[in-house]
Image (cartoon, rainbow, N blue to C red; front, side):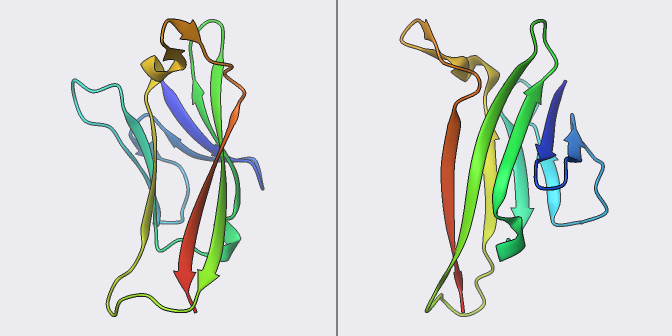
Length: 114
């Protein structure tokens, strides 16, 4: 099982493809025959800034942390609403045959219009 957790309030967002938050902007995406697990945030806001954790229920437990930084910009095309998606591939823990540190942070920034 793959779960996504928002650390600001230790809120379980998704487990597998099921969404456990009442905030309908969040959803998990997983396509059959794929190892990719995506957390999608529709209409991201400043309050979404923070750390998100992708937990993989294996033995031993593995996690991947992402720091999201939502910032404001001056302009964006009309009628465009940003959607943010974090993709995590469990097999992505390997980099040229070497195991990556599972607790390493990845920082993602998203620009929003005024």
